[in-house]
Length: 489
Image (cartoon, rainbow, N blue to C red; front, side, top):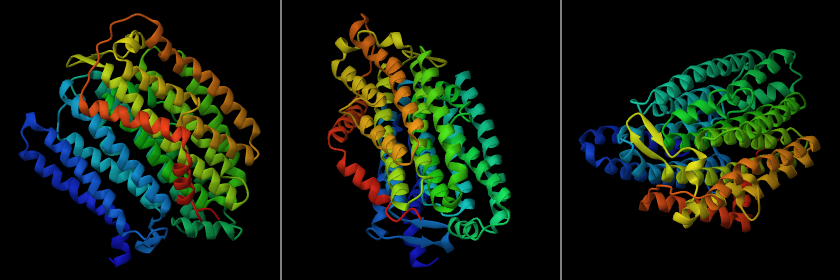
């Protein structure tokens, strides 16, 4: 291992080593003191974030013969992954003990799935993408079934595992076809082979399509979304909260790099397909969410819809011109950050209202359970209203700015019809998002809620970020655009 290799993977090494040590340390922590493991997990996430000081400011490190890369793009995603994991740990502080799920392995598995996400962001080789995807997914399969006493949780884990294995097979087959057509799995070498008028174009396009299918499952794009509602509903809410943002961001980290770096010359073929998938994802996700009366299933279909908006950025990145492609990818990164902040905040409120009545069921998950929240917990209701407005795309929230950027990227790329579908589906989403606001403030009820310092802090931080970046989006958008500087060819 050269010094360059070491510097490039230092954050990953720190997190991997720390996770293994934490697994052993947790054996010494008493069952009733697992919060110690939670604090140690936060320390490990902070240590991994500090590991990025070994990366050159504004530079780029290529490690292990081009299999990994440390650049601004990877840095943006790594900080997003670590930040979302830290907020998830705060949400777990109270949620796990009051639902009877306090287990130290939760925090260890969380660190390992973040490790897979970070590898997804740094992967510059399709083999590493596959390994990272499995490292990301396997801990999430286990976490989905963390509530072993609940049949719905075991069902969620089984469905996620079976369909995840199925999608991995598509991805591996796609990688094999790309290798057969180009003679390499390295993204830069695949680009060079595709540039040379590859005679095996049909084989290469088949591989590209299968890679899109494999990663489409991870980001819950239509028609690869089937697992999402049942898994989100059955898994413990704190797991669902992290899965809805972390796994989606990890999938998009690989998807955007692969298609923009390795397949820009095939954009004429995959660009329109990505646009159609984005349109179908927005339409199905938003209209299916309207019919839901369970908050977890509603947010599950909402998550599908938002994958469609992010896919608009991928479709726009198929346009000619490096600057336009970089803006489209930057818009997708901004939207991912906006969605992460807003959605984690919404799930924090869900966990504040959810109640564990027994070891086999939870209540407080119906929309009617939010009746009267605006008067009983005004601060919590105000935060939830802000999150719902942001997910709808109403100013002055970060969600509005995120949609503005991806719609603009689609228009600049010539996808007027796609932008129109995005606007119309956003209007449709207002029905089910604002329905929660109406229930909280205009219906009578006596909701029973939880108030704990860590939970309240997570709600406050996400609400503040949702509002501040909505009125001052410049710093975040600058970080997103700087992350993709020189990214496209």
